[in-house]
Image 1: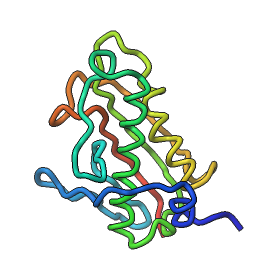
Image 2: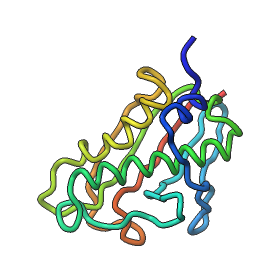
Image 3: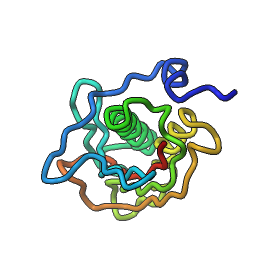
Length: 155
């Protein structure tokens, strides 16, 4: 049997931040049937600080990748908070990721691999890899480096 997502979190020595609270009028996640729509999340660190910056200006591609991975950890915290356990996630369906970057930066997909590789590592090669879009943004809320929203199929 495959290793459960909760077990993988421990095996990968991942530290989830506290599930972020809404910064405006919205819910962090809304369930409709067996789909969970997760609102846009930023790169929230365990200390409560968001990673800010613009890739191609004051952040490297690798730093953007790390920020996208940190968004993944924040989303995992919201999933766990909403569902009670990551083991209730059946699969990642769709991801939309925005990268705060300069006009000439064109490696948004490489930045978003920080998110995608984390989801694959936690949920598995099949369940953790879904459809994805990676786009640029000239600015994101509060100057954050990456924002991601996602749709998950859940039990």
